[in-house]
Image 1 (cartoon, rainbow, N blue to C red):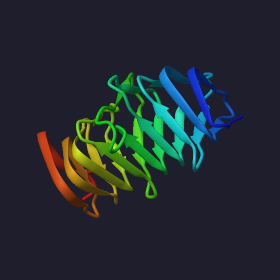
Image 2 (tube, rainbow, N blue to C red; image 1 turned 90 degrees about the vertical axis):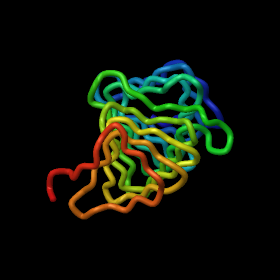
Image 3 (cartoon, rainbow, N blue to C red; image 1 turned 135 degrees about the horizontal axis):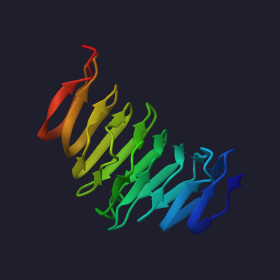
Image 4 (cartoon, rainbow, N blue to C red; image 1 turned 180 degrees about the vertical axis):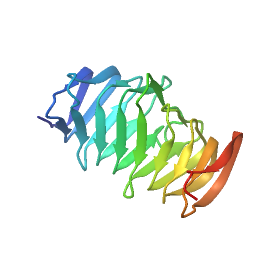
Length: 193
């Protein structure tokens, strides 16, 4: 199905096995995005906006629009993969430095594709229970924190400062254009070179 219109505020968003597409704006706070048990995917269309604040995401998300993770409580992936081909704002850039993307359970992941951009406001964090696969652009304003590792998979990291516990480097190498603190942790290759 398709969810369209100006703004939708929900406490539970059910995603059917055939998936659903958001074409307007949805505020999920505090609430849950769930599939019906059959692996449905929520697609955030180009031009659409999904705002998560104290939300739990139990369905896969394909983002071609804008997702903002905002608020003092952590929004969590719970057995889901977030694939970003659009813009993912952790904290509301220029407005709020509060916003954290975390995890519960296992099987979570965050993949920032080649055409994706992640913007992290100072004081925000990503801890999705697995390393973040960055093929696109990751921008920091202030100091952001990534826990469980960052894979520099052809992507770039720019901005002020980024704290990570493990920095993964692919065989082809990687470029880091921002100050990074890797502590406590290490810089590792992906095992292929």
